[in-house]
Length: 483
Ligand code: GLN
Image (cartoon, rainbow, N blue to C red; front, side, top):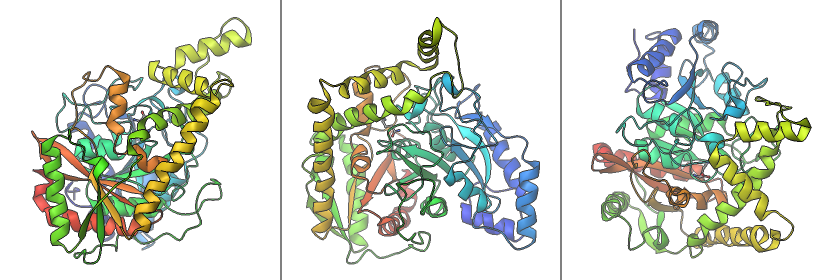
């Protein structure tokens, strides 16, 4: 029997467990849907590498299913962003410098998905080294939004968001440094979640800005994202920043009522010049939460306007240090030049694209002896104030915050040529990375046929409360979430 694409990941797993669908058929159908969506380089360009040699993998998962030893994702096909290490497919970070590079080890998140029975079918397109908001900065060409192919899917995890939106898989992994899961989720009309910093191991995620980097999960529906996130969460001795905090069951957070839950509406996320149609979709979602029993409270996060400037000092600073490892010696591309220095120069100039080069220059500058105090140290101080804003509202009895995920719907390819204009796409998302708090985007409606995301932000390690609200809102909005 074939796999019907509109069921959830849990429903597919159950169908496989009952013997109605084989593991092989589910994988074959995912790749078949990728072919019909034209997900490769000649079409939407959302998948960089597809695994057509899944025989052994499917057989071993099928054996576990037949022996009633099936894991919580048994036979569920998944897509992984190209900066998360897999051993079966390359990990090239959307960059020429790592083109075709195959990692000798798996990321912990990938290992946990595979231990749960998931089948990795493809690696997805992304902005080079996760620097961007549109997937136009990929060295392998831009990806397109399956809902509106003249538009970007968002970024940097645009390929993963698009793979879920195109119905290829129900669960995909992405990464976030400033919004790269939530923003493309909003643009593609799917669910995207970034956990608390430390909740999911970063082992095997190629580092961009280590203090801001997170692995996140896309789902077609809230339950898919909950199941994926719950599977990859938890302490990992291979990442010293991973947290020992017990992992809560997210898929049982389903909750109809929101009675007693206080939802803050931060005024800085609803500026006067916010697109009135986006404001309207947010108001409709807030009304839905109110009618489920939530109390909506106006709150303020006063340092929000400093988040983009602070992010664009800290992220490039850390990136300039992290990307020093791509030197033509240890990994991937090597272009010979005049002596060792010449080889470094030729390799790095030839291997990195313009946005990555810009970030390395910016980062090196803000860390240089004469400017460190003026830029980097100052940015760290303001980052602490941004984190304190969140701590204050959550300490004042507010359980969750609700905001738009992005200030606009998906824009047309090529529409943002000024880098600063592109940076502003993350204005509502990068705060959660700076503060390390969990945040989730889910579809709340459409504007001109284009999806709009609503963002739910919770206190550190309170993913369960965030998912309870997401489940409730998804159920209450029903079909309106896509209208
Ligand atoms: N768009 C932001 C940037 O370019 C965030 C990217 C991300 O979250 N990886 O840095």
